[in-house]
Length: 255
Ligand SMILES: Cc1cc2nc3c(=O)[nH]c(=O)nc-3n(C[C@H](O)[C@H](O)[C@H](O)COP(=O)(O)O)c2cc1C
Image 1: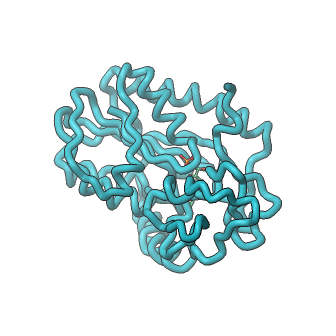
Image 2: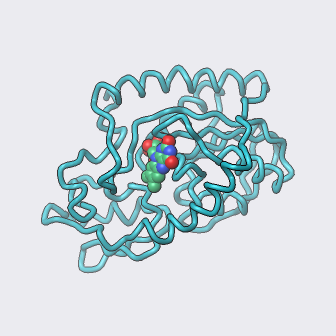
């Protein structure tokens, strides 16, 4: 079974391609994460866990959820990451730790480079349309290659994570999450139609709807689900996002 979390659609895209190739099911974990539902998931086929890379790591809320999630049936587990670059940092190491904790056989990990979705920083640059189309085409090829490896029960090549990387990344991530991902700059413009989609897609229930308008409550995962899934494009982050395209894979997939 292919399990995934995806804020702006990249990881869902990859998970669905892999599941299709494996004649397996792709299960979106967002609702379970929202409800802290760690109840048993059973699969005859190997588990394939797909998630985006955040700050050179697995998203913190996702790895915390996964550690507690009960998996039964097949004891093999693969991980597939999507990121805006091919550097997955310590995520592969984290995956191995989670597999060991579950007494499962870690079958390695792979990463697929996808369009960048992080818009809430003046230092982050989005891909242009041409790059996005190239990356999405390449992603199909990469995902099918990954699925073939899984189909033949071969291991995915997990890159060795050096001690220096762990020393740099692991203490840095919680600090970044705590101090560099504020909720306060998120706000709606008068385009807001009060549909509540933002609250629905927030994986950590960080948005409350009051008087038909969203209110962001700290802490925030900065996953970009709210701002990039808003049907009215009515959400901004301070004045950083005003002239930025809010990435969502839906805009680029053929109907
Ligand atoms: C908070 C945040 C941090 C990110 N950090 C990284 C990173 O360190 N390295 C990287 O390659 N991509 C990074 N990205 C880009 C996403 O991993 C990438 O766009 C991913 O495919 C998004 O997946 P999704 O559409 O399934 O949510 C980051 C995105 C967000 C929202």
